[in-house]
Length: 153
Ligand SMILES: Cc1cc2nc3c(=O)[nH]c(=O)nc-3n(C[C@H](O)[C@H](O)[C@H](O)COP(=O)(O)O)c2cc1C
Picture 1 (cartoon, rainbow, N blue to C red):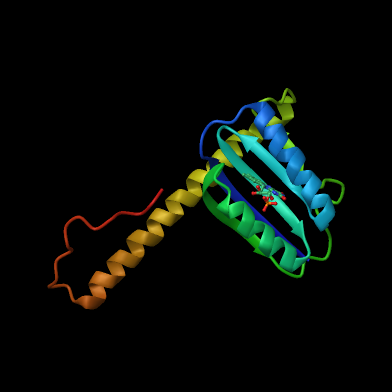
Picture 2: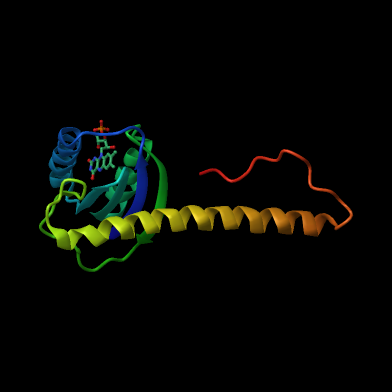
């Protein structure tokens, strides 16, 4: 089995009804596919875990990636050879943290935001490291061209 965890940003704001609809449709399809997991919505970000047969997860992740309702997908973890499901009872449990009244869930919002921000920072650093090494390898006499596109995000 395989488990994929990613984080993404809403393409545009979504009402709790729209989120519920998304979650219900995902749960219905996942039930047929033998996929389980959780989808958290928090402060304009999604945090999702999907787990199930490897090929099915690869295909589903590719479908989700193309979905116009979100953008800036950042893959946090992709685990092969998973022995046990972490969410065996949830074909897709939607946790809308923006509507949650359980105060014990509140710290999750800060953590999800921190994970997203951290991933953006890592992406920017990777870009800077690679850019630096490329110019250093070319020779220090060469100048950086002006206006090279910066990191995305
Ligand atoms: C954040 C997010 C999470 C999603 N999660 C699932 C999911 O777990 N299972 C699923 O079938 N579709 C999920 N979808 C919807 C898919 O992207 C796609 O719309 C749906 O699977 C229908 O695809 P189809 O039209 O090819 O059947 C998700 C969409 C978004 C934006």
